[in-house]
Image 1: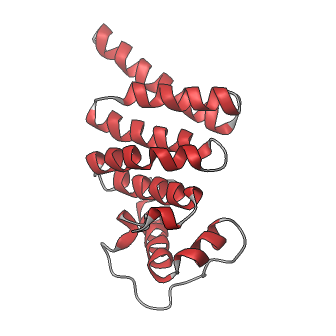
Image 2: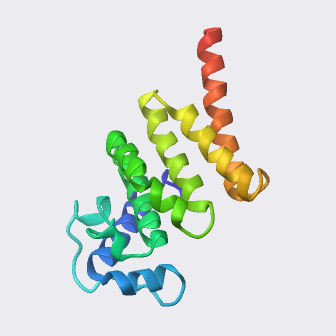
Image 3: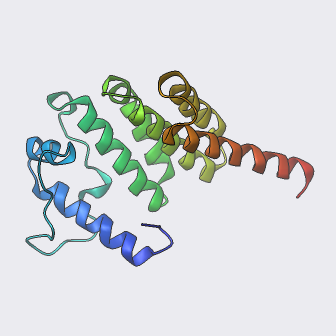
Length: 169
């Protein structure tokens, strides 16, 4: 789904918010790992402005690093969508140890990429975040992987914009 379809994107974010607010952490972890089925519709009406911005568990070390990492990435995505760039970057700094402890490199690549997206919107630090994402992808799964291509494209976009500004375009 594209965020250009803002009504559909907001509806999807609302469903995620409801799911995370109503599902106990062990069951949510099982569902996110593919071992269960997420609810098709909420059982009660959704209140706007709820917990989507903060799905990270209160006691992160009581959960798998993967769950904490995915929750932080989801929360960062939502924060970027809501123009909360400082909060998204702070969350990714906090989540970095969980990204690196989770299975596989995807969490670290996506986390660095989300930090870079937030930084791009603030015009500060994006290139370093994208370089880190690309380095993790290159060392673990290669630059031809989906995550590697995403990091490469984001880094290329920032460098293109830098050159355009330098040349006065």
